[in-house]
Length: 260
Image 1 (cartoon, helix red, strand yellow):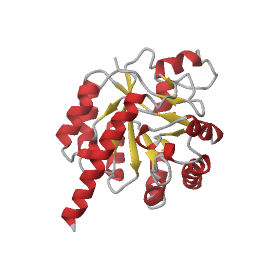
Image 2 (spheres, one colour):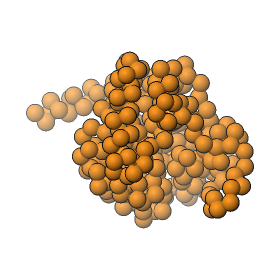
Image 3 (spheres, rainbow, N blue to C red):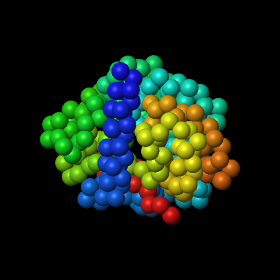
Image 4 (spheres, rainbow, N blue to C red):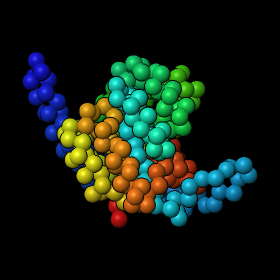
C-alpha cells in the first residue's frame, strides 16, 4: 500500500511540475499581470495619519514568503520558526481537510500577524470550471476563514497558477486579488530539504514571492536556513500586502513579480 501511495504521489508531482511551469510561462494564462513595483507606483505615497511604521519596499530589498495548501500537521512547527525568526508570511489556505481540520492553527496564523489568504476549497483547477463552480471553490473558503478569524481573505492563489478572465471576474466579485509567484522550490517533487533550500536561494531576487508548501515533509525543515541565508544577503521579509504597499491589491487583478 505504501509503495502504491508513493507511486501516486510521484505521478501527481510530475503533473504538478509540468502544470506549474506552464502556468508561469503563460503569465496567468493570457491575463495581464501587475508587478509589485507597479502596484507601489499606483499607490502613490502613504501619508495617512496613524498608519504607523511600515517597510518601504521601494527602498529596501523585500521578499515575500508564502505557503500553499495548508494548514497541515507541520504548520505549528513552521509558525514556531517564523515567530523565533521574527518573519511574517502569507498563507494561502486550502479549505477541505485543512481549514476545516485545523481551525486552531488557522486562528493562530491570523493571531500571530501573518496574512491569511485563499487557495480554494478542494484545489480544483479553476480554469476547468464554470463561474458558479469557481465561486463555490472560493466562497466556501472565504466563509470558513471568516468564521474562524473574523475576517475574509483579500488575496487568493489559483491552484497551479491557472487563471483566466472568468476566474478574474469571480475573484473581483468576491473581493479577491490573485497572487502568483516568481520563486518555486518545487517542493512537491522532493523531500530533500537541502535541495529545496538550494532552489529557493538560487532564484531569490528583490520583490520576489517565494512559493512553498507547508504540507510536504521536506519543506518546513528547510525554512530556517532559507530565512537565515536570505537575511544574510540583505533581504527583508514581508507579507504580500506589505510588498505591494502603499498600493493595495485590487480585487480581480493578477499580481506576479518579474525576476531580475
